[in-house]
Length: 271
Image (cartoon, rainbow, N blue to C red; front, side, top):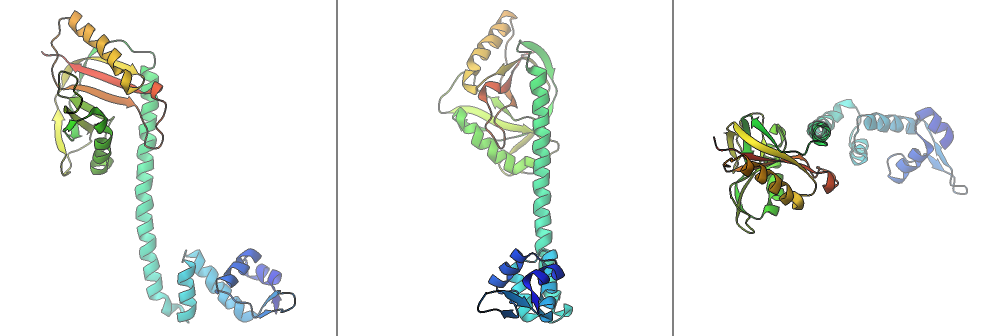
């Protein structure tokens, strides 16, 4: 007979683990002293402990181990259990690979946001520039401006792994509307993909007057006043849809500080 301490040293299982396995009915001591309650183990317990440890190393759940101990006598009996465990591990591997890709995408996005923040932190003046053509995936709706967040969530589910740039909105109205604004939340994407209910198309190149607004979305009006005054001073005629590109906004995890949000307003100039 071995004391629980001796058995722990022999098997490489902690005393806490041995007690837990006893409570779960996986490894019952050969003898329990009725007076002291001390556990004692014999050589047959060593075989059981070795099997449990080997199966735990293969990440079998304790419930499955209990079944195996009750039903199996040699390795040949394990084939079906091993095959099932392999399928379960393969499914977990796929799941964690998907999570890894999502984390990589989040890291990339946040690094791009950090770079964009540094680039635009000191530059909030109206500029003119040529915006290159981009391939977008969008969902055009009529509703409230606050509906955009929900639509961005739908888009991310449909084309998430193909997103190739910052979220943006196209505004097809030349005026403010409360309930029936004609808007299109969209994402730049790397390649054409099939997605039900999503418009996939290239946005043509366009000359724009632009302004990077820093602050909450409900203060965008002051920046629109600045950029429109500039366009009028130049005698420009503006085209629809206008664009907002969200350089820095609410993250996937944290809402962030709205005072630090960066939104680039792009007003296309009629050629």
